[in-house]
Length: 426
Image (cartoon, rainbow, N blue to C red; front, side, top):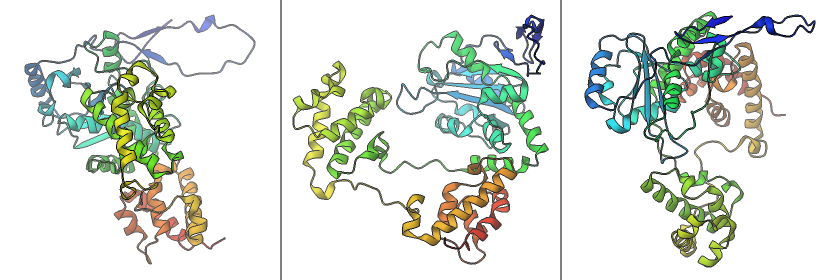
């Protein structure tokens, strides 16, 4: 027996009667039809500016929702630029754009200004789309919709299975999308990522509406669109894996110099930083504080051919750090603008610790009642800040609003958080 999917040309041969008869009671299981071939067949990326301009003209003719996705090469190349952009709208079909060959896709921004953008996990793709000149005015995030709906698995594949009964093949999401030419199998994978995104959006909208959460979702989507660009991280070198074990300021200075040197080389070569020098090598060298280049290259993490060839560069970074005066060494911990880690609250401020415990208990109850992860109910960081430095009187709602909480979140959690401020100390 052949079952045909919602996508044209996709079929699965099934013979359920071939299952062995073991006397067990049959159990109904959902039939998942694999989605293997895009409705529009094989699609080559647009690389010609004239074709891009023609697509921009065609996209400007209507303003129906448009599915978008982007492929990056974060594990291979420096930064998170888009190496392929997929777009699908029912009236024009699926189009793949090569922003490397085209330079940018800014010509598509105005033609798509009136369309709702449909993305999965929008926060992952919006920065790289903005980098090539594309910004949404309205959007629908299917991944966030799944979280708000309380679904247990919100990856694109699981959602498509649950909501549409279709199976998306895994395979090339972590590939090196800077590869040129892109293999045909990768292009098929990319096209299928937007193949049924509009249909998934419609199904998720119906589910949210049935749960009374559609307006909540719209507020969340609007907040994503309105969010300013993320500011550069202070001291990004402090995110080096394994650095949490280091406290000696001189050791941290070596980490900093090696990290900055690596970042400069990675940017120049357009390589992911860990491909230039792994974090493990940075932490090992800083911890050992080698006294000579020979001692450096004798370390196991520096015995490779590439690292030995660059040993002089790494040794220069270490020497710079070792020569710094004490006044220029980095502090073990940056002074933050927020409260301390919750584990330390009981010692630093028992009343604040009691408030946080009461708030967390109340929020867990609300999250269970509305079937939603508590982190989507309201920002945990905002809760911590509110409980550590409580607003006066009835100003909790205003404090939450100032901290970025949306109206639906304030309505659901405001009273509980106000009550938590009066929690007795244990």
